[in-house]
Length: 404
Image 1 (cartoon, rainbow, N blue to C red):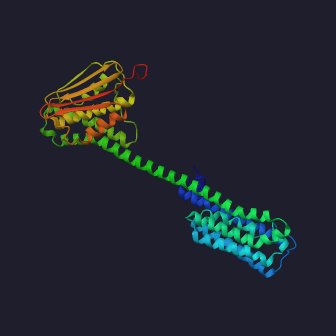
Image 2: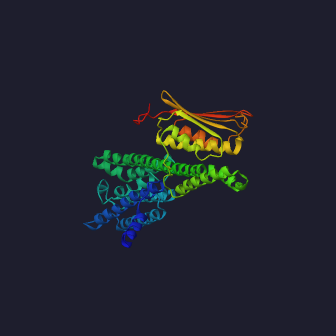
Image 3: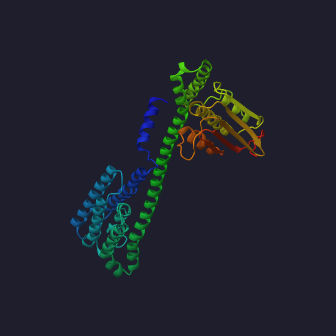
């Protein structure tokens, strides 16, 4: 992208209206400013385009000057605040329009007060409805503002309308103040509600994204934290266990690098069968006496998302066996039955009481929660002195890729 294109993009982003509550407030300025500008242009054209019939030029030009000055000031104020929700400005604008409507009695001939630009109060006061329908906090304030405009309009126009035989026209115009301000208020309320809910949804999504990122960080660092504990005392470990710890540390190092690079985690040729997953998980624990019994699951294929989570869960369980269980032997058993697969990880270690012993992050999040997210069930049995047995079960994916 060239420097000129970047500059144009930056300039556009400054003026782009965001789809947020703040954006609705900013775009809400447009109707009032636009309608007020149109009213000023219309009044100017009507005033200077022909013969002006007026009872008092002084009152007429005073009213003209007040309308233009107040309109420009109100537009500037609203643009500066980037919001039409300005109750004080709304009160000033409504009061000004009421005065201008009543001033028609002093400058407009009686026969010209209904539907002509000699009496221009009705035409220019319609723009006030946009701020009256938006700025006030309560409905009664909005209705009161529209009613005040309608009353001033009827006071200045209705007698002439009755004399001309068109009272219905004046009454219809007056009711239009109230009807239109209600529509404007409803539309504004709905747009602001949509924008507010969108803001809340974005905030929730951002919060969930942060929580998910933190969970991923904790997940990726949980097992390496256990590994660091072993590496800190590497010299005290048997030679065979040292080699196993080093190999597993290299695997974890690659996973952390992949996570930091925001790429997919390396698979290291990870198999798609249940038996292959269990063998792969146990391969990094050559220092443990592990028996993998998965002949009954040799051909069972897992969905990719289940494959990754299951292997990580079994790896976490084996870390727990290594660090906490003080086990002499561990058995990993995998089998398929009908449309389900089952994995049981059993050790003869110290065990614990599931009802009274708090479960750590690894068992709670990397095993139970992670497996349940992919549709697998986890059952934990353990007893002090009798070891631990954890059963994982889920639906089976056949070789043709169809879930049974």
